Image (cartoon, rainbow, N blue to C red; front, side, top):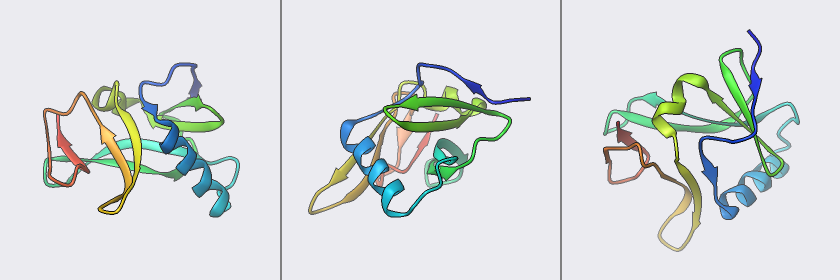
Length: 116
């Protein structure tokens, strides 16, 4: 089975998040065949945690294009992140990616895990 390329991603990245992803890709010399993998996995204090990292597409993946960044997601994860916005915070108290997920019924205090 081949991966599918579609136009509209089920999630969005803010301008700050896109800028940070592109900067990391450039600074770390991420190979051009890699994209940004977003998904979920079991675990975390609320039951599920977010995946965010660079990876190659696999057979069960969908591929989306977001302003020059290839977004890779396992098709099974879409129902957990549909409508999610990924932002990047760079402040005095915290620095990192923030997940604003309308599918989350509850989240933990750190914001990196949720229950659906």
